[in-house]
Image (cartoon, rainbow, N blue to C red; front, side):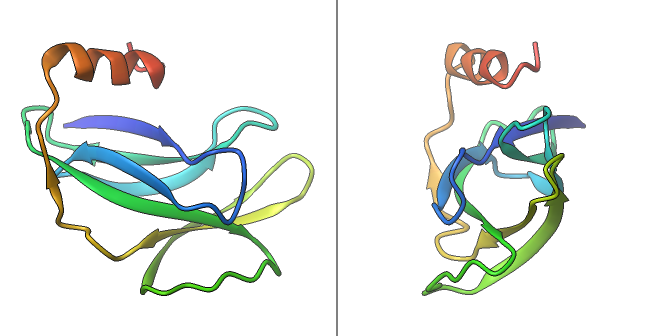
Length: 116
């Protein structure tokens, strides 16, 4: 098992496409640092070389969004300024398989995520 973190960007209401191992299961949403951007944490099989592209979005309480696709709730984040963000996975193209990353690309992702 391997736990990975993926950042969701600095602006709410903007869908973010994330490439992750196909076996990934979303565990939670959190804010990494004080005033940092929201992240999702996933559990995955460390040996899984297949990758999929998935889409996530976070919205502030009271923020409207014209969702064209079904969305699955992931979690709520309350930041240090008491802003409340709600994280969703947008359920379109969930099973879109993308090329497996090379070892160098995977190492680059892990370095960017601060995992190594």
